[in-house]
Image (cartoon, rainbow, N blue to C red; front, side):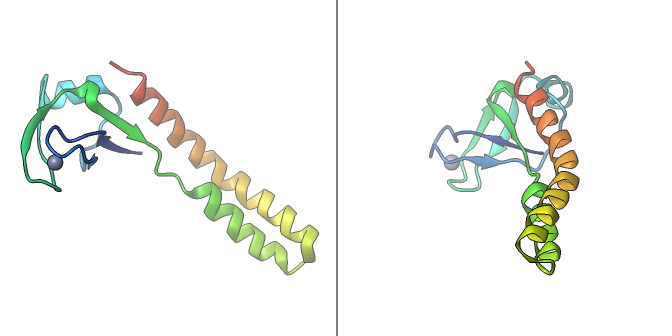
Length: 110
Ligand SMILES: [Zn+2]
């Protein structure tokens, strides 16, 4: 999971944050009501509220896992490919689920 601000107040570009927090409450607890952030695109410094911060999933496990499994399965022909992709996908899926849950939790927090 990674955090970002949808739009810079000056240039409207997205700002990726290197900070980590489980929820917006945590952000408030860590930084107070506003977070001062310098936009890497335009260099302007603005204060942002925790509700302007969003989370997105960084899990690429499903694609990676499915692909790895698929390649392994490919040795066994087209059916092996499908089975392999399914197994690899299932393994990656668990991590992905957790990550997506965390993202949901963050984005529904206040
Ligand atoms: Zn900017």
